[in-house]
Image (tube, rainbow, N blue to C red; front, side, top):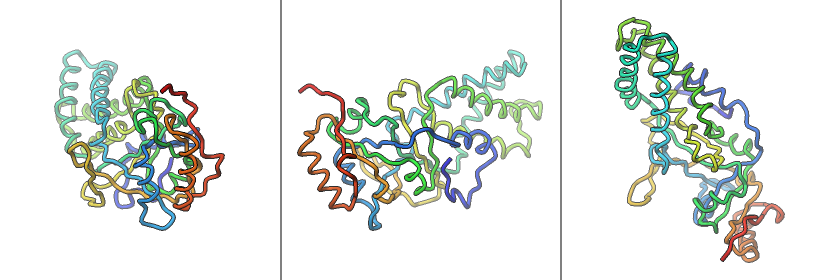
Length: 304
């Protein structure tokens, strides 16, 4: 888990510590890769405000291209909640009542109570992915190699592999939703929550937001994504907006020391000789020391 002085003014709730924190305990890859086109590549290495630093723009999760992640997690939660009710021994009538409460009342509360905004950066553990070259660099961009520990130590962040396996997602959600049902059952009156349980219900629902950041449908599994997440209070104005396809996209800047870059791979459609020479000059100009043997060409063959 990577968290460095995180949320000093906002303590993380016990549901986060129980369900989310264990996901971040360890990772098995030393290197992660960020795919980008040439404009993005230039911006990363020239946009830092501090000497010797590059910068990433982390996008607000509500404005991601695949915003369906939140919907995916909520829909999955609704399916599992009904199963949890049945396994708790509730009658068919009770199952319908509590499922209705969860879907209509608690999910409505979920959308209104989260006190935080979430921003993410996407990487992959795959150094040479045909899919990612196509999606993020038009096949002629670059990917930047980082030592994952060196990079995340420079951020106040959380990081983890994206979870695509539905069985794993269901197992995690089932435990959380069992706790939520237990809180609803305390009063014995459907729809009522004891005053002393309200904060726990809110905390449990907030945990769904964390799951949605690291859950994706298995159809995206070829991305092999490693995600870095940042959490800011909703009243924090430390964000900016960029324009994209006629919309304003909120983002935050996070700087890193350029010396932690460990390599660059050139996209499969790029001319290797001229691109490598130009890249080497660009990196030198921007005081980035990468040995020539760490500047590699994609091994994916393309026909022209």
